Image (cartoon, rainbow, N blue to C red; front, side, top):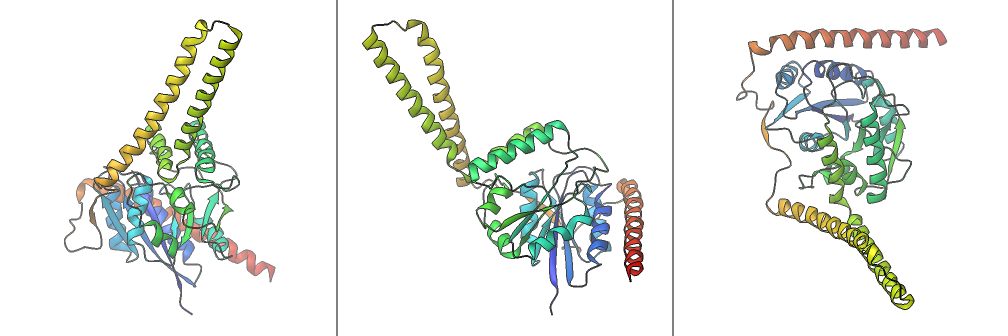
Length: 347
């Protein structure tokens, strides 16, 4: 029986201290199951620290690691899309570079996928995010439910697994306003959740700024016409209300000068909103026509002969990452030993 190959795609943003530990601990987790092989696609999303140096080092150390260096920061979803073009696994697994989506949770998603689903998202019963990020997640969830008809009980998180045919469909997208939820939801209806634990970030802080969160939320407009229809409905409502008010005023003979300004303001708000929404769609069509790139790849580690290797300036990062990965190894081996001891004790 042939083994199932899993492609693990990790977008990396200022992850010089964490990425080695994530890769090695994930590999140790997957090595416990003989029926799977794996590869890692590590995408440096415009980091200006030693992140790509670490990715290069890992690609030289492990034949199953491929590194991609984007020419500029393109956003998490576009970086993942870049990685998907390199992936050739039967399953494609997405996870973060900071241990918040932990390797120990991977097989909860795989087991659910093998029940017959096409897409499985992790679901955090408890999140370790700040107030602003939690509010953004809630707003994003409600927006996707409304705009894309996502089931209200289906939650999304950065850890997910999909089948190969879903990846094949997703990479056909050419829009630079990429939103993976939108692409997944229009590809298959066989989507579900698997409950996983949300771990604390070990290094640094989130790369998401308010501006990036708004841009990510706005990318949902690519996959829905509901905002246009909502504005149309509001325009018709205010038009009908204005005509009705005018009719009542004429019949009753009452003056309504004192309310004219408020009516003008309300109608002006609808008009401006409508123009803004239409303008957003026009801008997106313009970008599609002019073929704004989703991402630009500067280099990748598959071309080892022509890829210069960073040197002394990043030696400190290598030492710190090595310490982190050794610590991860010890923790994983200790966990495996405890599992084996508990299992033998049950015998």
